[in-house]
Every structure is written in C-alpha cells, then in structure tokens.
Amino acid sequence: MTKITIQDIKTYLLQLQQDICASLEELDGVARFATDEWQRPEGGGGITKVIQNGRVFEKGGVNFSHVHGLLPDILKSETRSARYFHATGVSIVIHPVNPYVPIIHMNVRYFCMSEEEDGPVQDEWFGGGIDMSPAYPNETDTRHLHQLLKNACDTYHADAYQQYKKWCDEYFTIVHRREMRGVGGIFYDHLRPDSEAKKTVLFAFMQAVGNSFIPVYQPIVQRNETRSYDLRQKNWQYIRRGRYAEFNLVYDRGTHFGLKTNGRIESILMSLPPEAAWKYDYHPEAGSEEADTLPFFQPIDWF
Amino acid sequence: MTKITIQDIKTYLLQLQQDICASLEELDGVARFATDEWQRPEGGGGITKVIQNGRVFEKGGVNFSHVHGLLPDILKSETRSARYFHATGVSIVIHPVNPYVPIIHMNVRYFCMSEEEDGPVQDEWFGGGIDMSPAYPNETDTRHLHQLLKNACDTYHADAYQQYKKWCDEYFTIVHRREMRGVGGIFYDHLRPDSEAKKTVLFAFMQAVGNSFIPVYQPIVQRNETRSYDLRQKNWQYIRRGRYAEFNLVYDRGTHFGLKTNGRIESILMSLPPEAAWKYDYHPEAGSEEADTLPFFQPIDWF
Image (cartoon, rainbow over all chains, first blue to last red; front, top):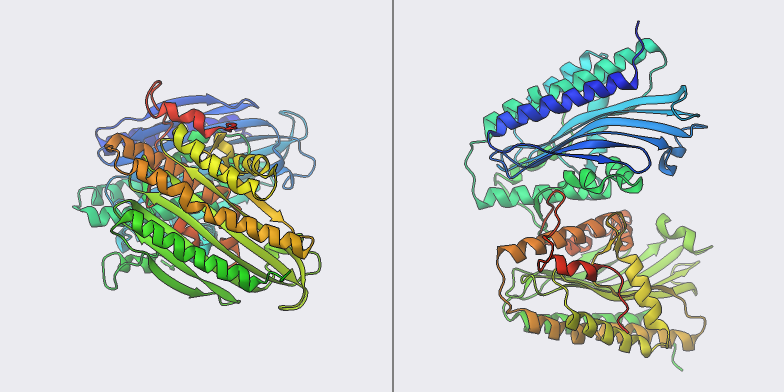
C-alpha cells in the first residue's frame, strides 16, 4: 500500500476546488470566480476563489488553504509535545440570491503535527462536513441532502451518518436561541488514523464528502432558482442570514481559529452574508410560510 | 452623609431611561418607543424600550435592567467568597436611518456582590461609557463628543478622561481588523468605592455620564439628519454596521455576559443593526469620501 502524503491530500483538494468552481459557474451562467492567492507570514497560504453578484449566487467563496509552521497556542492543548503543524482544507460558503435557494457550507480538512518541522507525524486527523441553511427549508431538498450525505458516510462505516448527523445538529446550534443555524447535514472532527490502512480509508471518506458537494447542491439550486419571490421572502432571507452571521461570529470554531491565528481575514469572513437583518423580537405570523419553516431548525431524524 | 442604596441607583436609572426616550422621540418626531417588561427566571428583570422604523431612527433600544440572584459562573473569578449579586444598568444603542448620523452607544451600570442574599455588600463597582460609531465621522461631531465626555470626566477627577478615553480606544477595537468600531469616547469598569464618600462620588460620575447622553447626541443628530444621501452612502453605512455587528458578536463582553447568563436575548441583541452588509475584500477607492473616514477609526488625541 502506498502511504498517503499531505501532497496527495493537497492535490485532491486543489482539484476539488477547481471542479466545484467550474460547476458553480455553470449553474450561475453569468458570474465567474475571482482568484486571490495569499501567503501567511508564518508559513503557507491559500487560494481564495470568490463569486459575487451573480445571477444565482449573490456571494460565495470556495477557499483552499495550506498553512504550516510553529503550532499556534490555540492548538497546544490538543497536541502533547508537538511543536509544528500543517493544516490544509477546502472551505465553501455560498449565499444565493433567491430566498428559496439554501445557503450551503462545506469544509474538508486535514491536520498533522510533528516535533520537528516537517518531521515524522506525531498526531494527525481529518475533519469536515456539509450542511445547509435554507431560509425556506422543504422536505424534498432536506431529504436529498441527508440521503447523499448518508451515502457518503456509508462508504466509511455503518454508524458514520448517525454519528456525524447528530454531531452536526449539536455543533451548528445557535445556543442562545435554542435553534439550529439550518437543517443540519454532517459534521465530524478529530478522525485519527491509527495505521496507514486507516489513513487511506479516512482520505477516501474525505473524498466521498468532497465529491458529494455538487450532487447535493446542483439539483437543489436547479429546482429553486427560478421560483418567484418578493420583498417579504427577501426580508425573511435577511433575518435567517442574520442568524447565520450570529452563529459564525459567536460560536464557529473555524472562524475563531482563523481570527486568532492571524489567518487571512477576508478569506475567513467571506462566510458572512452579503446582506443581513436583525429586527427586534421578530416572530413570523402563525400559519405563515415563514412560521412553517421553524420546526426544520430543530433536530429531525430523516431515516 | 446618607448612604447610597441600590434603590437610589435604580431610581436614577429609570428616570434616565424615561428622559432619554422622551428626548429621542422628540428628535424623531414620528416613531414612539414600544415597551417590553421582562422577568429573569433566576431573579430580577428589565424594561426594554425599542424604537423602530422612525423618521430619524431606524432601530434603537434604551434598556433598563436589574438582575439578581446566585452569582453566575462567568463572574466567579472576580469575586472571592461572594455567592449573590445584583446588577443594574441602562444600555443604549441607536441605529439611525441617515448614513451621516452616527450610531451611538451608552452603558452605565452598577454591580454588587454579597455572601448572603441581599446581605452586606462584599464587593461593588461602577462601569460604563459612551462611544460613537459614525459611518462618516467628521471632526466637528467627534470633537463635540469628546469635549462633553471630558467635561463629565472632569467632574470626577483630572485624569479620568485621558484614562477612560484610552480604555475605550482599546476596548472597542476590532482586533482582527486592526481598527476601531467607531471614533471612541470613554469606557470604564470596576470603579470600586472604598468608602461611602467615594460611592457618592462614583454615583455622581455615573449621573454625569448618563446625563451627557442627550447633550452629546442631540446636536449631532440635528446637524446631520437632513443631509442628502443615496445608495452609495447607504452601502457604506451597511458595511460599517457589519463591522459593528462583528465587534459585538466576537468581542463585546456585555453581549457574551448576557448570552451566557440566560439574559433576555432580544434585549441583548437589540444592539445589532437593522440591516448590515459584508462585501468580500472591500476597500473604498482612494480619495473617496469613504476612504477619508478610515483614519478616524484609529486612536486620535483630541486635546
């Protein structure tokens, strides 16, 4: 068996970024991704790809990064004697124009640590997930999301979907509002290979998740992008986007990790919505289309 | 000398809330504050007053609260053997319609702790401040703000303004952006009276700050509320409001304290802007009205 190297993982991630951007550009039909390459002063850097003011996508980022160097303090408790790290991943957040097209988020990442710079790996793990935050969730789209994520998880092991679905429900909760950011999906972290064989399996799982992004999102975009809406739906979208910003700024570990390790601010905060709203003590009218969405923002068993 | 009681402080704060709401309603001329009284399950409660969709004020809150009971964990490190607390204060955040009228924020508060419920006070302090976050800061308004805050501080002691102005510059910094949320003002915390005489002085200082809110804000609103603007200024206002939300959700201790002590979410988050925007890697064009604002978001010595 060939050993999986960080170079193999990077090669996959860079290709994934290309493929996803190409598919999203095709879906949009008008806007193109702009590319910013950046360097991290302490080591490494990234390629940020951003689409803005499209026909379908109001603002979205498909970001690759590979940062490395001395371990930041924020990670030290996790790592015993390790002093150096590598972290590489692809992060996606897409904010569509049409309130009936959901926000989608994906992240797949790999971390490793070593005592010497680029020395033998002492500790390593995979993490990631895909989750969706529609303003107007519906059962068809949500089942489709969960079915494809279950399929990806089943390639890894039989309990993976149930575990990572639950983890996602818990992680993407806006604790102070007692509601989820969206309709969930899967979330996993610290999947540590204890052998080369296991590393191959975990890398294959990363690919199963990454490769399901377009099959998950494309039909959902196509089914909803021409639905008509007016100011009322746009207002509800802005309120749900406000909740999205609230979660990301108050709770998201990835955001905090980036802000505290001198990450590239604009790449980290590309996740924030192009426009968002906060109304005081707003509750949708009972029986309205908006009120009907609320049960979706609580954990639901789809299978 | 009569001893200052928490009842004296509450009486002042409730009157301040009334007076400020009356002045803001007069300035707006159209919208009125709506009142929500709320109870905290663990003890105490508050009176939230919110104005929305006014002629001058798009969204604003003038909130009184007095919460008490068992000390929350988040405060335990500060307090030795104390087990019970009272906290009372007035918090204001005003988001005006016109991009030339600044967001203003005020908070004045008093905390005390005791070993027995409502027993002898073991530790107590005053905190507060006023600061302003214009989208288009100008020198006249900023000098007026700082002059009136200096006058209020001078009634307390000669170094107070310099100290609390510096504290404000530091506190209201969006660390990851290396810029201030606005043009500063004053911020102070943990001013502990070591005698009844000192408590009288600190209560007088709370009143000097609270009473300067309207003299600070009224002329600034009146000078700017009829200035003409279009989509361009509105867009810049939305971006600066995005920074405001970023600070409050990532860094503000008061917000985090509220979210983590089962505070009333809608009263805490009334500080968030009615609408805000995040554009990817946006930089105002060199020489533009917007670019000219940027130096104001760094510490400046006004005297």
